Amino acid sequence: MSTAASVERKPRPRSKIGNASEARAGLILAVPFLLLFALFTLWPVFQSMFMSFTDTRVTDIRTPFSVNFVGFQNYAKALADPVFRRAALNTGVFVVVGVPLTIAAGLAAAVALDKGITRFRGVFRVGFYTPVITSIVAVAVVWRFLLQPDSGLVNTVLGLVGIDGPNWLGDTRTSLLSLIIMATWRNFGTGMIIFLAGLQSVPWNLHEAASLDGASSWQRFWNITLPLLRPTLLFVLVTTTIGYLQFFEEPFVMTQGGPLNSTISASMYTYNQFGFGNYGVAGAMAYMTFLVIVVVTIIQFRLTREK
Image (cartoon, rainbow, N blue to C red; front, top):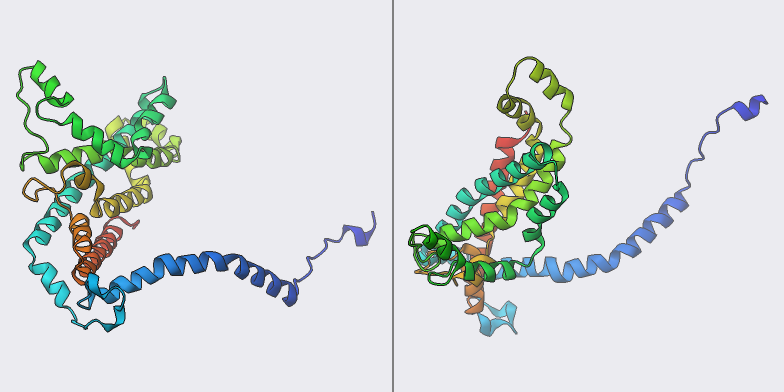
């Protein structure tokens, strides 16, 4: 073998013309997406922000730039609205109770599928995840029938053991709890899949070494598995919280916000304001919800980030 053949060939430097051609081709391919994104995402975002500082109503749609600038008056009006404050409180309760329940159920199911359940594991995975991919409207309608006070399956089963079930969706004491339980049942499958992937990346030799040192299953889970799941936990926590802060379909389909506004959410009340033509106030409510989502997400990153 010749010396020249044995010398490793160095890659040729790419010409500036070739780089410019690739960049131009990439830009041309991205233009359709950028146009659609600007038209259907950026423009509505800026338009809604503009409306939140004006007195825009349904009659001003054809002349959006002839409205009056009112500053933060819409935001003050939204904060002074007792129904919006009730909706914000309902949303807060939904998040504070529903997010931990959903994460705990998803993590428990993931641990069971990873270690406990050995037979028909695929069937359980599909069964747990099926509610996630099912239409939320269909799920809400089915649960509304299940929770009927007289003919619902839940109260029928309770009646078999001598318990007089309440009017789950018609009682202010149980209506929001019913929505939380339904949302937890529907959404824990997403966390289960993500936690399952995280659990399978935990090194088994750490568990084996801790077991030889006499650590119990709970101690291994608390001191080894859970710390190594911190990035996964952060992702599930943030995405679940963002989704629950915007919950809308559950009260819209099952209770229409009742009884007595006990299940109305901030997103649903904002939607109602848009329907009533109060675009300025509705825009202010939407951006207040957005601000809450940003603040909560930042706090979660601060609390659960890796040290």
